[in-house]
Amino acid sequence: MAEQLYTIPVNDAFSTDCECPLCLMQRDLEKSAIEFTMGPSYMEDDNREITDKLGFCSRHMEIMYKNKNKLGLALMLKTHTDKTIREMKAIADGAKPKASGLFSKKTDTPAMIEYINKLESTCFVCGRITPVFDRYIDTIFHMWKKDKDFIEKFKSCKGFCTKHYGVLYSTGAEKLNQTQYDEFLVVLNKVYFEGMDRVNRDMSWFIDKHDYRNKEADWGSSRDSLQRALVKVGSTIVEEG
Image 1: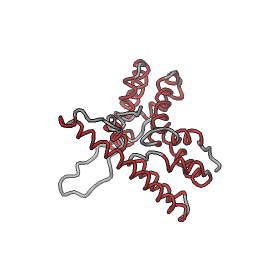
Image 2: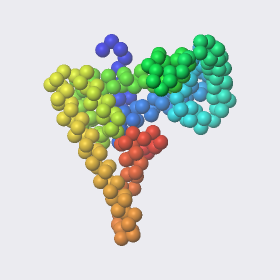
Image 3: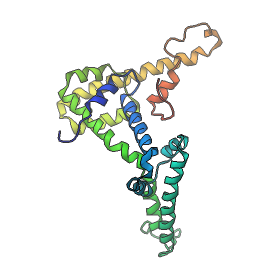
Image 4: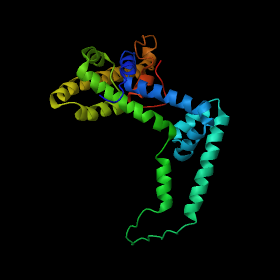
């Protein structure tokens, strides 16, 4: 493959005791992207120009707000909102859109709504994460075709969250030939459903353990099952470990 492969982080993630290696890789990328955004880079004109244009999604604004560098966030948001106010005022002062009315035909999307929709669809931090994560996915399928040891790691992992199971399910059809894809789906389905069933059983015992009749019973592997179940359903509010 001409583009860069990321065999080390992919191997490391699949060697880690976690409920979804893809969540782990994505979370590590997010931490690095936040550290870059909130570090000295926010003072650089080139980066500030990009953050002014792209802004941040609500998730990453919340994470950055919890960061110690409140001044850095304020500076980025100040210049971003300066630009947003200036451009939205220019649109508002332009041609006024017509009311469609109850029985009128649909018209083109007003320029203001197009601007807002575009602004809401971009995030500087997401923009740093997504291209690398996409290469991680490409690397998984490259290694599936070329590395027998990786296949064994894949088979022995604890499964995936439902979102990333879907990513692997759909992307495999594009990256593998039919024979390879059929073999991949057998393994993918096995590790996904076994992982989900395992966590589901632990959750059942976690619930039963709160019955007074089971007060003296052993927790087994269920004590952290709620946290692991949240990972399985794709929650971003918890981290394993």
